[in-house]
Length: 222
Image (cartoon, rainbow, N blue to C red; front, side, top):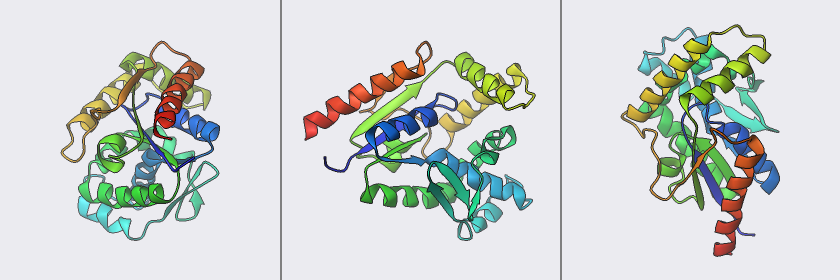
């Protein structure tokens, strides 16, 4: 089979990463967690005591930062930060970092280079509209704010993190607003993307639905 690419976009907490990872395993292709890359930059800024509003200082970090993926784990300058980048304090700030033009340009270049050489699946906010405009398959994954908050609340409680459900709802609403109104490549559905709503579906149902779309598309282009 020829090299192909899959783009999955959608709002925070819609399940993009979980679903993309499983589909990558099923199709035996490379999963590129673009959101983790922005979270890694956010983490490094925090570790260096840089205020998220200090764009110049954050941009300075870019040339001194290495981000890699190995066996599904995220490495920042050689250190496994897969768990740390998922903490609430990172999630609360990552949209602001991702809105910085220079940060997006740097990471988008890296993402495109990876896709040139192998079959990939990427998830994020602007994969189908910007990063991989020519992706073979584009999915726009959505779920209600309440459903996304409920899943996030359960996930954090299972990790022993004490959080408020109402605070998570507010955080998700804030991130949706920031992501959809930012000046640089805002969150929006690509014209040729297929909407998949997973609000009332099980994980397996969503995966089967997306795989059906992929197989149909690839057969048409073989």
